[in-house]
Length: 180
View (cartoon, rainbow, N blue to C red):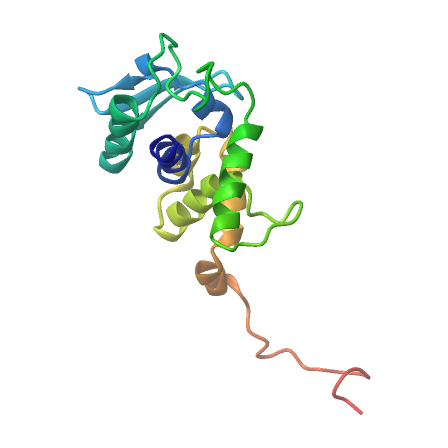
């Protein structure tokens, strides 16, 4: 399970794959020679081609060769208990992630932003902080529209400070806090 879970977490954190795409990832979606992951996104129905990053490729290889149960399933990720079937809901990834967070002592509550999707959101933020163009971020994350990627700009507080206006030339008039 550890090898499987590590590969799943890396696919989300390093490639930004949605949980629905991870659970539906097939052995044939990995182009080992070309170094690419090629799939049709479940959410959008659009094709997505991403680089097979070295650490992600190693994790996938390790799971497939040394951790994946013996199965004829076309899907990469299988449940750890017999019958060895693919995950049928992304909720399984949320439970997997929550288990590791609990082991790490990370407290969770509903809608706290620390769910499995936070891995994808973190990648979006890292791309923004690295000043990757928003169009490229949209392509990496498989967004249909650049507008979907704009939410990650708001997470970039360092660059947002450059947009902030100072208060020079603005006179405080009238009654209010500090004018007593």
